[in-house]
Image (cartoon, rainbow, N blue to C red; front, side, top):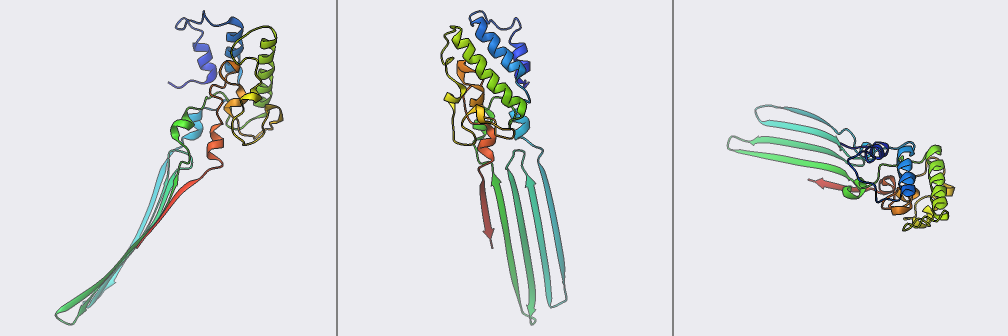
Length: 228
């Protein structure tokens, strides 16, 4: 069962987990951060959507004893279960059969289709490894939270707590070149990145990776095919 950051923080404090070897100050800092991170959006809820398929076909036929004709057109549109995933196709067909006197017949057949496919422009494994500890796009509350979390991290380091990476600012773990390069210049609507929340022992951001929206919003992968 998928859990929010807050639900996970509550569960890890049960008797099922041994936290005795973790520095109490660091543990309190990180658990409180997981519990209180505002406007959290699950990566699965954001990335997946309800898929659908619509198809339409139209055909007509007619003729007489000497010539017969059949024509059809079709349209298919599929919305994928993942953002930026879909398929669209147009197809047509024309058949004409004619008698040439009493002994010969001739025919003409034309088929064709055009298809357009939108392909998820990022590796699904890479998208799904994002931590569900933040909104997809920053809010005023989430910006205030990461700036306060960075200040609390610095206070722990200044108090003498020596843990790997704890003395580093969140900005020092920046990755990528999209959007503001400091958590102190964020505005609501900016993409939320993992590194905004620190990294490893430094914060609660895990890998420090770019946020999932950075991998989809500015990328597109498509394929077009025409057949006659």
